[in-house]
Image (tube, rainbow, N blue to C red; front, side, top):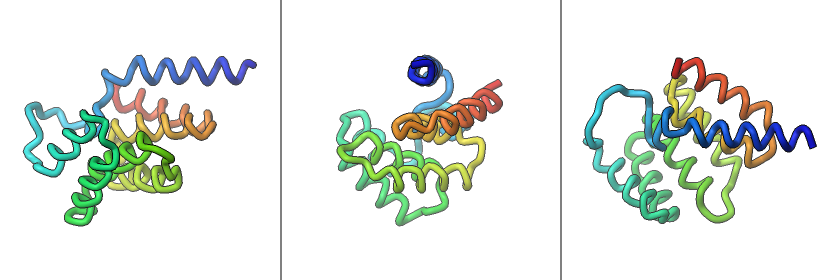
Length: 137
């Protein structure tokens, strides 16, 4: 029972703090304004519509053109995770690639933490919550 209460408290903390940390494609840049990247605009439109298959296809296309972009890996993992029957192995592979490419990527830390909660790994979720705390402080 204690572990369940702790899990729920961590979920609430992640959800409550999420707007302060990052949007799905937030890499931590301080620049403002709309994304100049047409691929990001396509993905954002699909995510806003909660059209997960379209978001996955748009991010796959973007990754084929530029596999070294952390935002693309983050959004691909996010769109898989939010869709029906997510392959969590694929989700973790792409979140981890986003973090390999950009270790301070707030969005990837936030969403990999949520993914760890989905699979019941509270310790790893806390680890990424701690990373977010360090990055955002």
